[in-house]
Image: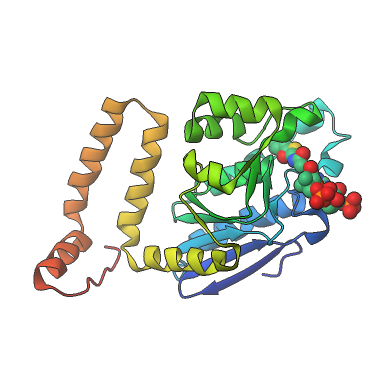
Length: 258
Ligand code: HXC
């Protein structure tokens, strides 16, 4: 499907979704968010896709929700339409791994979008921020909650209250991003990570996602129990037999997602 605000391609089982509103630094308007939800849903339903990359341009991953589109809305408008809720829920509920490849600005909703992905690879030019306070609002698609879990209360408060930007080096040091790479290598690195993931058992990847996400949502003892049962349950899979058998046979495993 052709999109107005996205460029999408599938190569080697990896679907790359590039946000493409260059005149507005990829600001997230309603069209873009609806198209993004559609593209992620399509990836979920396509057996050929085993990993997704969401990225932007060199200058901006996304500079936030579209301020022009939002500025005149009333409380009733945004509440009754649950502004951005259903579209972002689609992304969060995706069971396939999603990598955010971030170059340039990832601000407000852009930073929140990156944090909805499973992990973030940043270029050395990336700048993260939650500057909503400058607009008289608070983050609305997970910024206060997810950033606090990623980097802790003190830095999250600092970011949300001052609206300052965090560079890639600070983002890596704080645990917001998993790795920082030179800008020119961003897509190569993201693609290589995505292909590595695509080679694994999708069944196991889905269980990994569910289990790591539990760490955010529950107590340690409940999370540990969930993990132990997830580990036990994978012994019912053919991929466990194949993975361990291949190791013992000193050969490459051939996973079948079963
Ligand atoms: C709409 C935006 C935009 C945005 C940039 N543009 N960010 N349009 N919404 N969030 C547009 C500008 O208006 C301009 O259009 C063009 O993109 C280029 O931007 P410039 O400002 O000229 O570029 P530059 O001087 O390089 O500054 C880059 C910037 C700045 C620092 C990223 O654009 C900026 O501060 N943007 C807003 C960042 C922000 O506040 N984000 C949070 C949004 S609120 P024209 O037509 O003038 O050329 C949010 C809430 C989430 O995300 C909650 C969801 C529920």
